[in-house]
Image 1: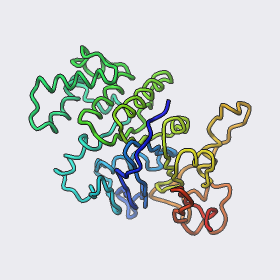
Image 2: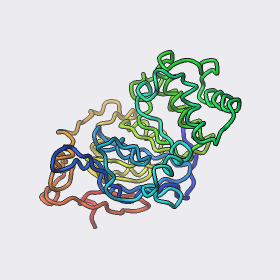
Image 3: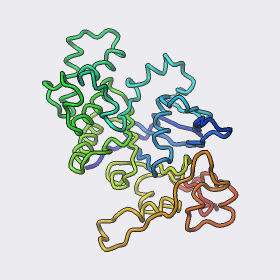
Image 4: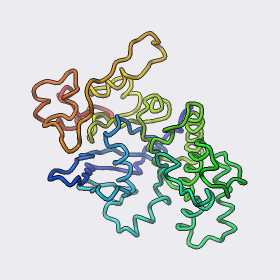
Length: 328
């Protein structure tokens, strides 16, 4: 399975995006700090890292859907040449679903249990269709359900009448309802069994190729990233650890965190190789270490790492890493 070839033209550019959470304490939690990346039309970007590294916070910020305690405190998010962080709420509402949509983590929680699945898919179309007639609306819902492999006869059913895999397919149909250019998939296979996960990934690959979508795929599964992504953004403790094309990240990782993550992932070509684990825990975002955020767990850390946060160094061909070891 492989996603289609991407365009080289930038569609989304994120520059030094920083996000805090108000915690009731004097010091906020610095959930995301100075994250930068770009997304081309048709590109699939894998956003990876351990739980709590800021992946979902970053994804929600791109649609300005942060919870009440979240604050975007710096940076730019440029979509087709305009900074969407400067849009009014009404202008931003026109961007959501129509230009950038999201497949939320946990379909059962994301779907309204007291409304039919078909009605929920129709709602997004209704909001962006400028009064589309009910007949056309019903036809579009049927087309979307067919696109994701759900029979039209099931559009009048409620989420609890769907299996886990079908609910996830319904969420994908909803995300595609207004023909967006970018889809953010936030761990869309979480809590699904292995066979259903494979089906959902095959579906996403097929739809991406057919529709030419740009996709930001949020996951902790390095196997999925290797299989479906063009580029990879590795996050740790709210910052960029490493960023580059998928072949470079997997075959020539430069950040110790990326290297340790890959060692912890099974390699089918070396079945007898012992897996390793990264000792310790990710940092608390309201009590970060004074230097590099990975330094307390890093096997190659030295004195400078414990007192200074490394900048993101540009290596070659768009490959970047935030580590003093790559400094030249």
